[in-house]
View (spheres, rainbow, N blue to C red):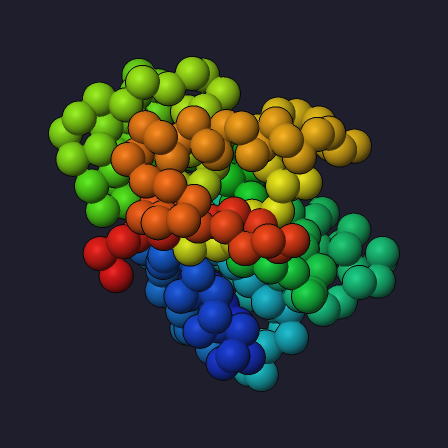
Length: 227
């Protein structure tokens, strides 16, 4: 997984992002000051930098220019500044993307993936592992405690989407949009049927779930049963 440097002075945001991105498998380092961030950003140790603009010792835009003077590391600016002139100026100064606060960790992670794909430096996950469940994304195969799971292509995609977000409640609307590519909605029953198939393969039931848990009216999540 790509390594990420977060330059953010707000401790709450800094720690929350570090925790959420680390849970997704990223190697994350954080700093609160621009100068410290510039020094680490140009070291060559990181695949992408997440940079706030409102930093206490140096404006983030100036930090970006310092980074760009010696490094082409991808930089995602994540800030509360939403003035169009600021956005254009920062992108022209070399930022690869611009995210306006407030944003979720999942939103930021998606922007990071997109930036890395464009830069050609993306490090793709070949496997996803949650306890005894393992998914080989290249082979489109899944095993549970070493036993092959018999899954349709769509069921595998659904399982992979959930497994790549362990513990997170995912709404049926999001699943229909991201797995079935139905951004304007679809039949919830479609999701229910595939979840039922997955549970059968995983050897569990809705009454006695192990990996797949649902919360009526909220969503579905895949959890690590060993935790």
